[in-house]
Amino acid sequence: MNVIDYFSDAQKRRSLLLLSLFHIFIITISNYLVQIAFEIPIPFTESNIPTTWGTFTFPFIFLATDLTVRVFGANLARKIILAVMLPALIVSYVISVIFFEGQFQGFATLSEFNSFVFRIALASFAGYVVGQLMDIFVFNRLRQGKTWWLAPACSTIFGSLIDTFVFFAVAFYRSSDEYMAEHWFTIGTVDYAFKLFVSLLLFLPLYGLLLNFLIKKFNLSVVK
Image 1 (cartoon, helix red, strand yellow):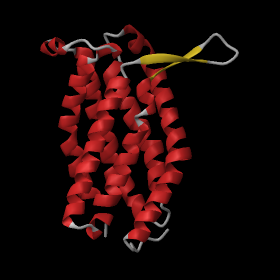
Image 2 (cartoon, one colour; image 1 turned 180 degrees about the vertical axis):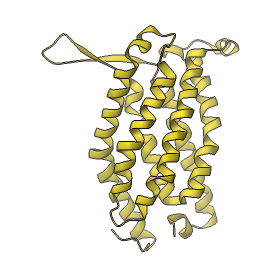
Image 3 (cartoon, rainbow, N blue to C red; image 1 turned 90 degrees about the horizontal axis):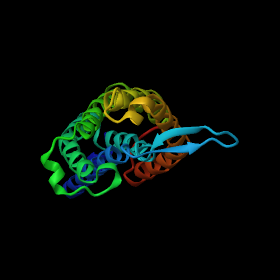
Image 4 (tube, rainbow, N blue to C red; image 1 turned 120 degrees about the vertical axis):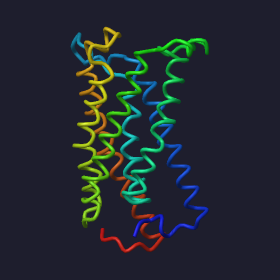
């Protein structure tokens, strides 16, 4: 049984709403921040590592997805993820156009099609769907095992790898933005490395505490 089976109808509706809004928020803010590039100086050298501010928000997508699957189960989680995609992409496109390149451009900019922002939204759809469907259909089997951390760890390592490079290739390969077109692979690599660092060293311990809390709270018969 899933955690959601122990919720009242009101709790189910509240949980569904909150998780849906969380997915939409993370997709929107990540799609916006990935437009804003900066460089990290390498100590004792004159070289810099190109990256974007979106690097710091993308890891939360995988945390949200795994918790959604744990709470609602694979079937309902799949429906939730697919349902939030369209509103998330619309909102992210609108926000990204209005605040293009980190500055308020005015609402009139919505009257003109922004291919750069559209490619990011399209890439988000491609990468997010591929990554999350892999998580649900492939890594969900690992969630049935005795080791609680195996599923989120494998999801982070392999699901994140595919999701990351699908996203950056679709969004920035031969992009109209020369900087992003030149550095998209390096930026994607940095993004992936940061996802691994955050997820494996920070999210997994916190995730374990949260999962144990839910198990004890609802008396779930899950083998640790």
